[in-house]
Every structure is written in C-alpha cells, then in structure tokens.
Length: 369
Image (cartoon, rainbow, N blue to C red; front, side, top):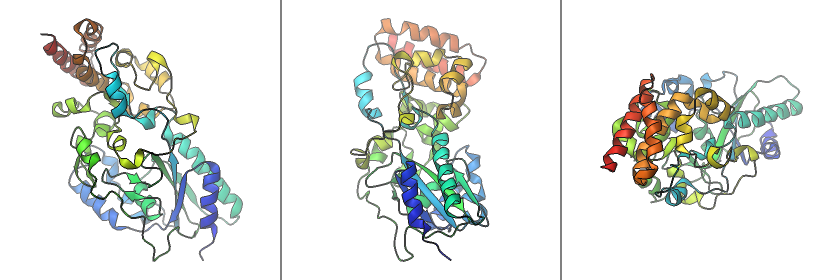
C-alpha cells in the first residue's frame, strides 16, 4: 500500500541540503526507447558502460524496487561563466589560461552527493522500522537520472539534453535512491511532467563550437568537448581540436548561454568553490602549470576531485591542445616558455601526449612566421 512518506521524504531531503527532490515509480518511460536508439546510432562513442541494459530497463536495477527518489543539488557559484571569462582573459598577456568545467572546481560531486543521499537513506531507516532495501547512486551506476528526474517533476529535458528547472536552470547534480519502499509519487497518475519551456530557443545548439548538438534534444557525444576531454582515452581527432579552445576538462558553453541559467541561484556550499588560488587555482588555471604537472602533483592537486577521471596523461593531452589554441594569440615574446614546455612534452613516451604537443607546437610556430 502506498505510504504518505513521499511528501515527508521531499521535506527531509531539503533539510539535508538538497535543492530539489521528487519520487517516481521505476517505470519504462518513453525516453528509454529514445536512449536505446541513440546508442544504436553510435552517439555514445567509446562509453561502452552506457550499453548496460539496466539503463533502459529500470526493473533490472533491483527486482524489489518500488520507488525511486530523485534529488537535485545546485552547484552554481558566483563566478563568471566560461563565455564571459574567455573575453577578459584571452588577450596577449601571459600566462595562457584554460578552463575546467564548473562542476569540477571543488570537491568530487560524487562523494558530496553520496554523503547526502546516504544521510537520506538513514532518515528512511529511522522512519520505517520494517525491513526494506535502498541503494544510493550518484552518477555511479546504470541509472538514467535525468529521465527519472523529469517524471518525478523536477524539470524537463532541454535541447542541450540536460535537465532544466525553471528556477535552478541546469546547474544541478542529480542522484537517486532506488528503494523497495512504496512511496507516493510526486506526480499523480493524471499529472504530466513539467512542460518543455525551451520554445523556439536554440542558443545551446548555435553556441556549441564542435557541433555536438546535431539537432534539438540530440547530442553526438563523439563531438562533445566533455566527451573528448574526459571520456576519450586516445588522441583527440584533429578536426575537433580547434573547437575545443581553452577547455581542458569538460565544457559549460551550452549551459552558459541557456536563458534559464542567467538568473540561476548561487550555492552556498563551500565544497563547490574553486580549489586553489593564483597561479595554482582551478578557476581559469595556468595552462603552463598544468602542462608541467607530473603524476604525483596531479594526484595531490586533484585528490577527491572529479578531474581525476581524465587521469594525468589525459589532462596533459588536453592542456597541449588548449595551448595550441590559446598561445598563438599571444605576443611572440610570451610564447617562448610555452614552446619550451611543449618541446619537452613532444618527447614523451605517452603517444597521446607527444602527438598533441607536436600539434600545438606546429600551430604556435605557424603564427610566428
């Protein structure tokens, strides 16, 4: 029998610190068919983990599951967006700067979310003494969080494929709790999810520098800067490199231009503020610092950080590409140190690093002639 705990759990989630919360049944919603078709088209690239059948068959996640609690946590901070920062930093002065996606400036969001989700599970155990199962996922399992979030009433899926909420925009981390508890869904059977408010807007599509949003609501991950700089382990295709610009980890552009993010509230959580400061800070980091970073420093700087996913070699590869895009705009006298760094990396035994460094050197040297 359905309990009244659906309302209680939403209030408790907000008490723990979540900004949004909703409850939904583990049903196969229409979007799951679209996801299967997206995979068949090869748009997932090398992300083979997305082939897990549990992503399109919610019943396979847990046969005993009767409810899914979806939580959203705002990570927007009071710092300029990448499209604003690029205009003020990309001048001829030194040192060259890069961009790390907003969500990865601070502590690893997986751990922040997981701690809060497990606190919510503990609260459920206190309210429901009878035995039940509950497992928390913070972007850590075969769960299509965005689809469940939509049908839990948290927002709509925008043209940039992200969950959009009218008040919070898209600066939201999503996590779920899959449980055997029978909780009241946030939306009544006759209710529809929030309406799609994207309208005729196509700013996210037009702003994507690599054309990854091939049509509204469809992302070809193989062209996406986030995929190229994080998920792709080999060399970045040459035809995509110029579009990457100064990005060294992820990309925020399709969110930066979204009208619903213009007035998005700012988080007060210290965990999401940029780590470090000055020449060793993660907000517009010094590209030469990143390029010269060895594996030990990488592990220290990015301990408990989402950036560790790209691994040291991946970050250096990305930094070489960014240097090849940024440094040609600088005065020749300010390029010499960068060229020295790249020449050393061009001798690396790691092929993705050496090849990317040589490409960057060639771009810089062409502009010097």
